[in-house]
Image (cartoon, rainbow, N blue to C red; front, side, top):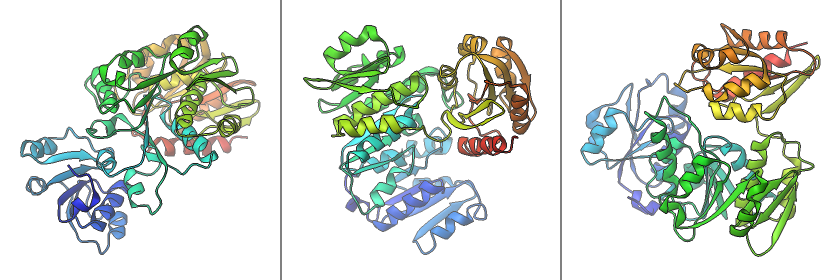
Length: 462
């Protein structure tokens, strides 16, 4: 719809949702002369902090609900993250020829620099962070954001310009994408998630598939060769328009991948080919745990190498990486028991990856908002690895029905009690792993709040 910020002057644009992104988006639009309307279902009193940041800006407000007439007065409606595009009010607007899009897609229209788009069910945030660090360590001007970190509109508002943007992209953001065109696409894995948002797994996959919408001969896609669902996506003609690199932890795939390009992990050796020569990186000095972390390293080094990251910088990041908060984050050791915070594990696939990182001595704490996920795929993993399964939250009954028979299982009333019971059930050399397999929104505002509270509880244990 627009290709340059100069085209925003005097255009009637509505922002839905006045959170952090809505505030930044409003300032950006006002800076470029747009006629801005903000609507939010929350009241003026509930939004007082955000409104203080907007003081003095020429903005019209429609708060405490949504007025249909206001929507029809717009040329464009931009949704903040988390606002579902499937609400009837947006369908009403579209039926009256009003364009509706999301902040991420809208902001991408004005980005002229190369972009790396990272998506998948799990591992997005870690891989995004690793690419950023590998490029930064190579003295390359890089900006990181999207679903991880600041919203993309913040880059448009910044004074400095980067050589490359590293962007985590969620399925929610991809739902709106029509013109988003990253130079590199990283697809970590694909498994069931967000079934409260999507009617079927097919709908979820179709949302993820949109990241390949605008691939061309200049696009490089970096795909997980060990994930059958990702390989199925790779057969799509849109993916085949560009170059493809694969990464794998299976030695059997080494000859094939070394021929077409990519990276294979053989024990501690990462064997990489992106050009005529084969390069080697070592995992021997890394403190990161689990096959999923090896996958994240492989995907990140391929993407960062594409944009000039040095071998020395990549190896330094691999050697020094300690993980990101709330993703298999080591908390402390108490009485011979180690505690790990994996609050970012909000789906079944993430819990499986977490369990793969440990032996057969895990006290597993799961639970949270019930989003209709099927937990049966991790039954055998829980049976093999978990000594005691501690369940809390809205989803505890569903989880218990699916996998409760795989282990000694306890259904607990509160989050605090669940962590206390986990500690009481543990013995020397056990692992207490809080890997919920659910979103946090039944009790907490975010997985970050949940993870921080877990750490606070554990730090008080004696």
